[in-house]
Image 1: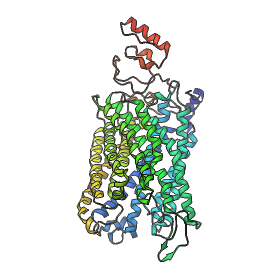
Image 2 (image 1 turned 180 degrees about the horizontal axis):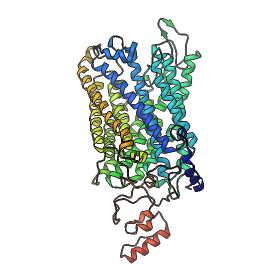
Image 3 (image 1 turned 180 degrees about the vertical axis):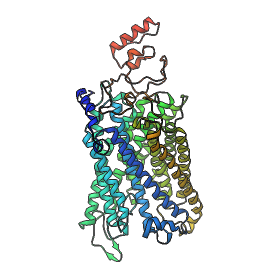
Image 4 (image 1 turned 90 degrees about the vertical axis):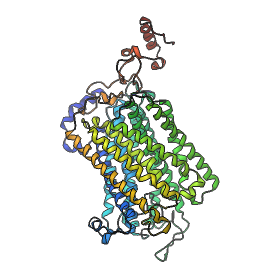
Length: 625
């Protein structure tokens, strides 16, 4: 495939003029992919802290359901009169926590940050295909965040129909307090968020296809780029479906249509709606909702691939298999959504089809897990904080993925659906795994983003407290789910069979609080290191990819002179015969004659001829053309 390089003259013009930027154009309305990546990251961190506080609030309610906490009334006002949280506000907390974590943190915070940072850097591009669209993408996301948070300040309170916003709670404004203005704000916020993702996705795909530097064919791209590229394609195909669901929901709420409503009685009044089906909404929602799982996980897998290979000082095991597994996941993610709906009265034959596709998608996921383990096997491992989080990500991906086999079974899911088993499963395989993938990326590329190093000891403290805390929070929930404990319930003391789990809830809540406090160490490390961290060298990890060939000081256009040419794949680590344990992608094969192998030349007869002349002169085996 042909490669395109942005005009060097234009790039030099940019470099000469970036000194004239104002504060607004450099830090606020920036069109530089590096600054936009920082904006996505810091906004995502703020949303993550907000969502974490919400989760600790509802965990306190579950651990001490019959106890009053007067301080809650100070912060929550009428939603916690007398120091006890109201049930409807509890559901609002669960709703907004899930929405923020899935969409604002794990989708925009993860993909928005690292797609923006690494796609131009690792492909050898001066910037994104459209810097203006890139800026618009961030500001749509930021506006969506502001609207979602603002819903806490409306009189009827934020949306409270669960993060999946199933009708009728989301479709009838008078159903409960959270069905009113708060739900309207949720819908507008999500529409803006999806617009942000679509604009960003078009930009990412265009950049990968058109702006690769000379020599950077598809099979020389790092796995990070493959992951971001395929994630953008999946998002572009699935996110608009949720917009269609939201538009129909607006009609039901405001115009009197009946797409999702039929035969309802609200507060003693029979609604006129007939002929609609809430199951239609579930189909539309989960057609996005399940690809969304992989929109969240695949970028984390891409970052983990890079970090594990770099810190094992070994080539990634099975590069082509890793790419094909990402492609397989991307395709299969569109034909498994029905496993969320086994209990909706689905035809058993159709349920069987969704069960088979769900079990099949475990195969490419398992390929990735096995390849990570093979890469680690007998590697010269450096346990940097980034590496710790990468290994933690693989741990959560495997342990959480195994429970997906149970939920993917149509017969077993009837018992486990909507219990804490589901909560445990997706918080491990999607939530914890993706958060750890994102954090491994933050620790690894922090020197490239800010030109400083983060504190390693604080990084280790952050890892161990978060890793142990996450398992203590979510592992016990599997057993609660097997016992039939339903999720989203306000109090366990209202039902005799659930009372025995109150003590377990206490353990989970304390673990959540400790894991939450561990994030204070990360926040201090992150923000203080921006100004006080040790200055970073150009290539602190000894990595091969192109971003580490750029200067530490950020400039427009990324490289001050010519863009590097790529000669090799990104995983030439510990190559026998070479004097160092890494060979950057921009080093020609003519400079590494002692370590070149037959497959390095990809059928280039002239390169093979030159190599054979050197081999003959040095009594080495001749490569067959």
